[in-house]
View (tube, one colour):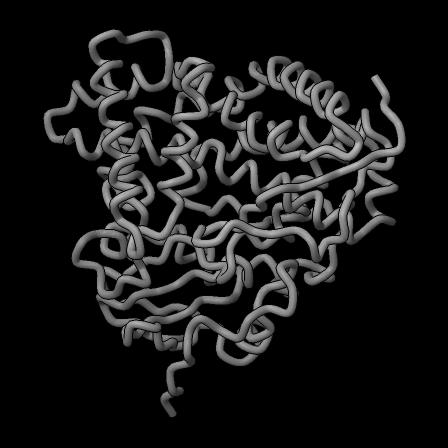
Amino acid sequence: MTQEPIPYPLAPAPTIYHPSPDYTRLRETCPVAPIALPDGGKAYLATRHADVRRVFTDQRFSRAAAAGPDRPTRELGSLAEDSLIGMDPPRHTTMRRAVSHAFTVRRVEALRPTVAALVDGMIDDLVAAGPPADLIPHLSAPLPIYVISKLFGIAEQDQDRVREWSDALVGDWDADPAAPQAALDAFGEMIVERRREPGDDLMSALIKAWDEHDDLTERELVSVTAGIFVGGHETTTNQLNLFLLVLARHPEQLAGLRGDDPVAVARAVEELSRFIQLGDNGVLLPRVTTEEVELGGVCLPAGTPVLPAIASANRDASVFAGADTLDLTRTDNPHLAFGAGPHHCLGAALARMELQEALGALLRRLPGLRLAVPEEELRFKPGLVVRSLEALPVTWDRVER
């Protein structure tokens, strides 16, 4: 018996801390479910960890087909079809190879002392401003933007301007295409300037790699550059903010987390990454099948759109004991917060290091760190694909050096 398509998006979640309750039912009864999209399109929704991971790693599930101009539905669109997240191997492999050297674990670890010093200085400014003080302008926003700007060779006085471009690129492209397109144009102008005056930085290295390949276009260079920059700070900022919101709801676990224990902090970063919900629908990087393929017992013809529900995969009880419970001591944690396969987040090591340093220093230096206002007074910016707080007022009991 063929199941009728389920209306998508699914039923809303009761809070921002848990995915839609429909995911639990689907994992148990129909893990690869037919869905009806708002624009009338049809797709399948993968909800179990094993199936979501398979969609990420099996090259028969194509990102290029889901992100390009001929994609089957607007619901499956990407912010920039020519960016790394909109490509398949071997083209994706060529482009990723050109930039991956900047994000190796060894290079990231070499940056850790610099990031630790930055965090300390930013906490000094936070302390001077409060308590209470807004964490976002003092730490969670400037830290990742400074780090990715340093990698790109962007001067400190230009960082606010470049961040505005980045904010535009994570807006609603369908509702207001002019703003993100203007941001892409601005990145293009920066690339032209850097080509004239190259330096020892990631953007110059990208340009050099591009210019060595006749089949790589300038449009792709702009999209890839902008995509890496956006991914290098937008997600990390909002991860840290949401980490603190989650911890505020779990004071007993927060009290047991010591900022001077790097192993415990690293474990907490992994669990918080699994637990938080960065977006409303919990879907990451839709795919389209390039040939007939079986997934979760369902035969999917070529050309079938598939939405991998990462939020559901990270709450799969067959993989995570007490999946709906935050456990900062969790050691077996194969979460998919950074994706998997060829499109595994390029900057995952960098993001993890920044989050570890920021969270550890906040806990170590500001005992009793907590929200300074009731949670219901916090507001999220409208029209963004990730949950981005307008402000995050915090307070603390005392200051440690």
